[in-house]
Amino acid sequence: MREAGGVGAEAPVERVSTGQAELDEILHGGFPAHSINILMGAPGTGKTILAEQMLFHNADGDRPVVFLSTLSEPLSKVLTYLQRFSFYDAEKMLGAVVYEDVGGGLLEHGIGHLLERVKTLVKETQPKLLVIDSFKAVHELASSPAEMRRLAAELAGVLSASDVTTFLVGEYATGAVSEHAEFAVADGIVELSRDRMDKRDDRHIRVLKLRGSEYREGLHAFRLTRDGLRVYPRLVSPPVPTAYVAGVDRVPTGVEGLDEMLAGGLWRGSAALVLGAAGAGKTTFGLGFALAAVRRGEPALYLNFQENPTQLARTISALGVEPEDYRRQGLHLQYASPVELRIDAVMVDLFRAIREKGVRHVVIDALDDLSLAATSKERFHDYMYAVVQHFAAAGVTSVLILEGHTGPGRGVEPDARYSALSDVLIELNLAPGEPPTGRTLRVVKARGTHHPLDARPMTIEAGGIRVLTRSSRG
Image (cartoon, rainbow, N blue to C red):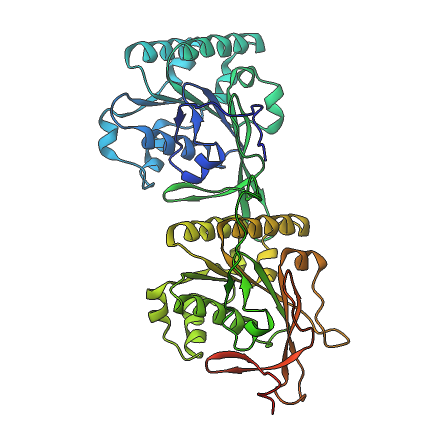
């Protein structure tokens, strides 16, 4: 899939890292070096923090990085808040990172003072990075749009002739892109936004322009933390989903009697959707799948939104195993509160664990909770399609749990779009009073596999779920 940016096969470009790996991923490695970029957004969206995060990350001492404060905030306040972040390094303030207030000069000499100061900096110190915050505030001192246009053009000429990478920070609204001269000379434009939701504020970052470079389009979630911006890139499908070899081996489900029904288990890299009403055994199914993988020496991750790790450990203990033993052997528990759930954040952490911990089996419990973190059903289904495609390409076998409701015939009917996400659909049902167990399991579909269609009795025992065969039923 070709991403935005206006180029085909991308030539190697020297990059300036943002200091945040996921943001670098969105920018295909970082901002192009020696470029002029605008960081725009309403007050409080995180523009200054991002700029400072980049400054300290790139302050390696060979050439200074410079922050010029204009008229938006007193420099003393900027420095006070700066020291609250973990990326702040007092030693770098001795010369590697330079902060300077040019507001007084602007008020006394006009906007031309900014141009002259930049010329001097470029000539005398040859900075590696230059931040001007706020460039938007300079407009208030310009006598006319024409004067501001001349400043933008002359400044761009000076900066383009040097090897400095520049960031113009400003409280611009989206419509300003077509109104102000600096946007015409900018090589990159990045917008930060803060959107009010019912229970919280959601922050997003979006690349509007990155001249001569590809980038990942769309809104990407982020949080402001003590470490600066923590960005969660929007998940997209793998560039070429067919560029991998589909697994031909089977993965045991961890459910006694089910592997026989599935001709040996689940295809490696496939996704199984486990559907059932409350109390039908869905969590027990998912835990059994993860624990069985760990017993075989294959790391597994259990992602859930209802039980925190302590509560889930108690549930695991009820299955007759010691949670800490399994954690040491490769069982990873990931928890996110459904109250503050952010789908992008959850998935970035999930895929990081897959990469760093060698995870090959994933359980998501449950899709219902995760869907609430998406802005719409359409976005959620598109998102989960991309997740399943990434799992398949990486050879990760997954169990996706979904709450269902018993229908007229005691069957549970999922949304057709959920069903399309899965290679295997397993239905767990409650049938109170029906001998011999009151619970049944049915394989509704299994791609590429001959399987029985009848609902079979099952029990939940100390070791997990057991599907009863005809012989075991007597």
